[in-house]
Image 1 (cartoon, rainbow, N blue to C red):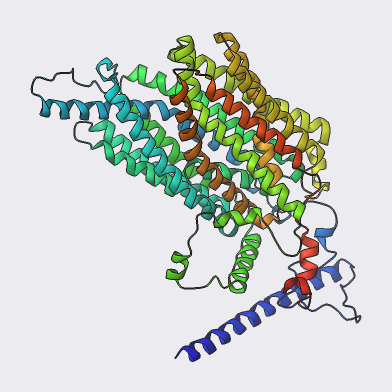
Image 2 (cartoon, rainbow, N blue to C red):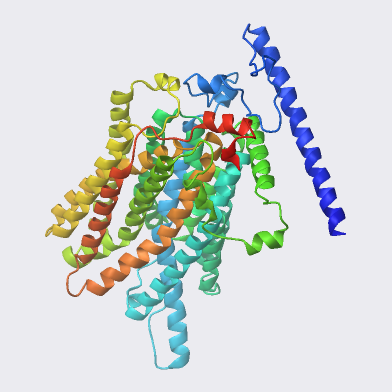
Length: 583
């Protein structure tokens, strides 16, 4: 029976191979007719005859468009009108609104969780001790009776569990969703990332509407659903993948900078708008209804109005390449075998390419860029809450002073991302319309300069946090560190310039995996350091953060320019199956 199954499987594989050869031959005939119509010459084999593509032939013949030194990422959309052509500004506006919702939900949700846990604590204590009394919780109001260590500890543990659930599930799904976007388009994955958030917002609305009957632990389900669909980390990665599809390589740092600018603008404005809404309406649930409407608008707008940046032709090519890889490396086993071999770190293999077209320098650059990018993101996540707690402890800052500090820092970051970085790029690389003449060739000296300068200013800013003795010095240090904000989009855009276009989503998905892991690990480590040293030397955590940035600065000097995956070399070697490098 097993022998018969093996024969049947071989027959099916041969049939698939013949079908691919027929399809490729048909494509070759169409290209031949097109070249004849344009008066171009045929590609010839060594014996003088026309080349007949087969199973191992490259998708594009040698010497065609890929060898003319130009970027052709938008050629598939050249015949479309402007309103139906991919452009980063189609996604940038709705992404900004989603970033506002992301920033606006943080404080109201924490306050809601605090009120729910406080209510639960009061109920439990009244059952244990009939003489115990605390004033009833006023949901959405000031609840001074909840500012007790027992409630604060319970809230900290609850938010930690929520972050762990969202981070772990996001680490699992981020690379999967990123790779799927390479084969099925960016729009559908952008929509999927919002579904978990929408489900979580519905649960939050139920909790705010019926707080007396809603079990607070159900909110953990919302965290899990948000993580399963990738959370905001995947939305950011797919938005960058969209920008990669429709932006020449030399301009991607600017495009990524726009998305980072929108993110930090949203984080700065969202809490202010949400606080104003709660103050005017007196009901916290109104904020959650508005945020739910924003996410629904994002889904509808992306589904209906945003043009897909990955053409059907490229999607089909990427699916075919994926299927061929699956057959070649035996990845078509049954689902039980796949489940047993599940490894959360497997998607990171895109950072270690091997075979024709790769090199040791390419692997070193990708690993170095990923490491620096993860450190930058991890330190940002790990220090966010510590800075607020530290300034309250050292300088007595309350909500107003903390809000002013965050506004100044984020405004400085946005100015650097939206004005300074584009101006520098325009000065060094020229007008954007000239960028299409430059093919993808890895990092250049300008990328490395921006990365090193940005990490240096991050280090300088955190050294300033360590030495600051007054509030104004703390603000100046924050503004200095904000200059380093131009590094993150340059790091990620540089990574995309090292791999073929069909691996962009997979690469950014792997980056999302690293960000998700940093989202879990970094806050836990740095909060533990602060908690353990606050009584003796509270600046210890900033010494550690500055040292981490210093390590990243040293690592950046291992990067090299003009290192990339050589697609032409890979195509030539795959075209010759007798080449020993394939064995």
